[in-house]
Image (cartoon, rainbow, N blue to C red; front, side, top):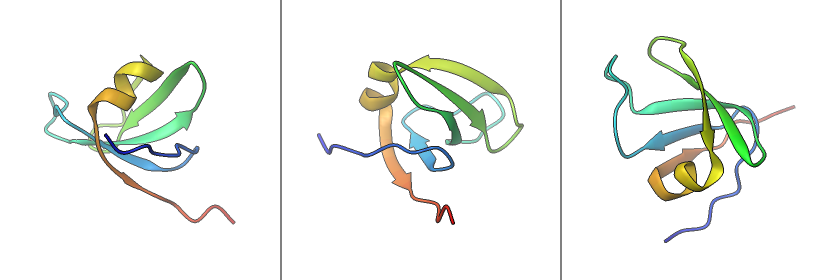
Length: 65
């Protein structure tokens, strides 16, 4: 298992797709829970950190200047 460093604004690719068909989520909040926004339909959800870490298949870093 690869250890990722999650930051606000990053795009995380999860194992299962959202009902809209998108696998990618934007990170809006990091902590014990993550607030994620679907890049396909803009739906926002709160997910426990352990679930995000377990289901992450890729992480795209955003340049936060």
